[in-house]
Length: 319
Length: 197
Image 1 (cartoon, rainbow over the protein chains, first blue to last red):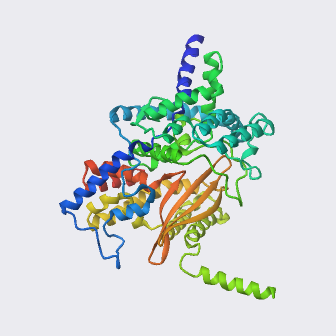
Image 2 (cartoon, rainbow over the protein chains, first blue to last red):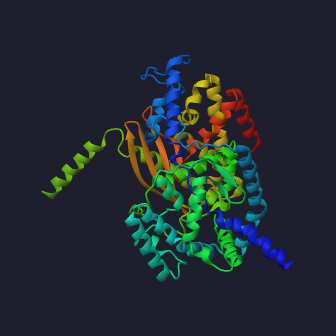
Image 3 (cartoon, each protein chain N blue to C red):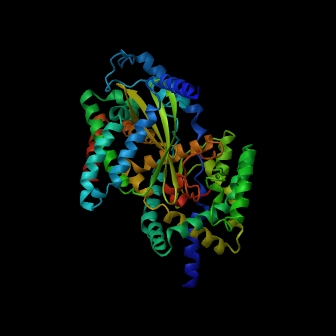
């Protein structure tokens, strides 16, 4: 019985542990969709089956036709490609099945556990736990800042680690993020580093338990694993338990986020996929995290959680 | 002497700021967001029974703040052209309801959150981006609004939460649906969604 438990619990946790793969989609598609959309435009230019897009701009009715020019104004950095942010999904049937599986895992196991936990432990304590783990993710962020030739980011992480480990009582608090010090965690991970050097996402893949990922982000996750001190805990079930606890604690801080994404979606699977792609892409594009604008500002800022981390609780990784 | 300078300064400020956008995009977002907060914090509307009243009030603010047609057009993008006029009107209506169902309760659940209005970035003569943050006890959520000037009023047509664009997220979903279905079938899916939730 005991042995069974020993195996089962870590097995589930194991999954969480490895779950960091929130890493990025991104430029995978930059070149291909570009060509595609160009082609599309060419085709529509020549077929002429559609009414010409150029309407008298003087009296536009809000219900007027949509033009590609609007798209490029809208998202200047993306040009006229509505397709950017797309990711290949060759194994969609498998992914959809895994999405269903993870959905149930969340509602049947993870959420009840996290809810029970948050009834016992007050929010402030859970935030501190989250800060503590976030502090331990510093090496991952620091290394990836360096790999992305961002010495300021690396320095910021170094200072943060020092401040939060000392003044912040082994990382339980995050004074470095306060308004006075304003050293924000640099949201970098190895998946982003690969993206930084032009590695594309490849294609979309949903792992059971781990959630949305891609070949690039999977590699990224493995890289991060080695830079995360908790990974070196021994024996393995201690590591599993700690990592599992980290996940439950994080989920307890954002119950409801996945639910709202799901409720708002017409096709939750596609909504999630797009979410993942957009989120990872923007994170690759963003070089580090800028200091907060001065002015009125936050009191406490626990760990840097992005929407992915909240929405894919299983898929959480700190950087 | 000093007073003169102040006077001159004021004149210059007025001169410079008179044309259409002197922070007008940011105002749109800020003024309306503050109205929302007023509704949420109104002690008279505290009881649970006042929920419907609050929703009504939010609806009015939403109509002022958002450019629904623009939002719909940009969500459908090229697919917008596949819909005829009647379908477009119905789409705008249904999309509105989908969003309302999805977010009204969420917004009503906010109480002591704080909103910070950071800055606006002008993209072109009639477009801008407004950067804000919502600060809760445990997290801070950056929200960027894309605003457009139509008929002399700045209105929101896209909300970007933590770098994820609402318009683009729905666009991906609708694209996928319209790749395999007719516009009429899309409308039917939306009708069901609105009824179901």
